[in-house]
Amino acid sequence: MHHLDITGLEARYGKNTVLSGIDLSVARGDVIGLIGPSGSGKSTILRVVMGLLPPVSGSVKLDGQPVDYAKAADVRRLRDRIAIVFQQYNLFQNMSVLQNVTITPTKIKKRPKAEVEEEARVLLAKVGLGDKLDSYPDQLSGGQQQRVAIARALALRPEILLLDEVTAALDPELVSEVLDSIRVLANEGMTMMIVSHEMGFIREVASRVVFMASGKIVETGPAAQIFDAPTQPRTQDFVSKIL
Ligand code: ADP
Ligand code: MG
Image (cartoon, rainbow, N blue to C red; front, side, top):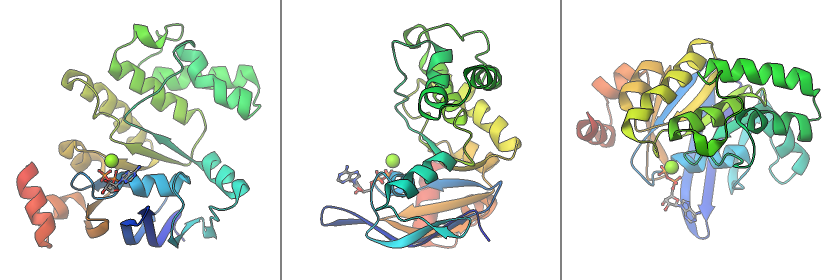
């Protein structure tokens, strides 16, 4: 049984169908690299999975259990197990780095403060910010803020982490420090779905690459296949333009 099973997923914005027939399975420890042209539906898949956009049809199953997105309790349970980090890190500006990471686990999840803080320190050290616990977001670079956002997501103890172009808004010299943190997670076996235009990075960390175009999955395979020997013309065209 797969950890996450997406079957026949269809999604629309208004009358505009932006995802159709999406079948995608994620096993524990998988790192899925989701690539494709702008507007192909990569973010929409992640949004539907998180319950931010209700699917028109199809199913999402977690450990074989269908998620009913019309039920708030189902969505809440899902968000206990899957976390997402966006391009815009949206930290709480009036809170320190440590507070940003501990606020949701303590205030919403009601976990013991000492335990959450200890875990947050470990997570912040892991993303290279062990010396920034008391800093405020406006004292940090974009790359540092995005790493706080990743630590904040990890503090929710997700089983699956979704990353949507988390380096896209960063100055080029800050990209690698964020990718380094994600690489550490991949090496630790974190299950992830990563949307990124950093093709070298996707090639390196993804256990499987999914190429999308026009709301559909065009081709799926190991990075070497998708980047070096794609079988579909649309994949060939995309890959020839980015490499
Ligand atoms: P990607 O992440 O691959 O760039 P998206 O999933 O963001 O693509 O978008 C897929 C399609 O849905 C695009 O045609 C886009 O214009 C459309 N779309 C995305 N967000 C919205 C929205 N909030 N309202 C209406 N249409 C949207
Ligand atoms: Mg997107």
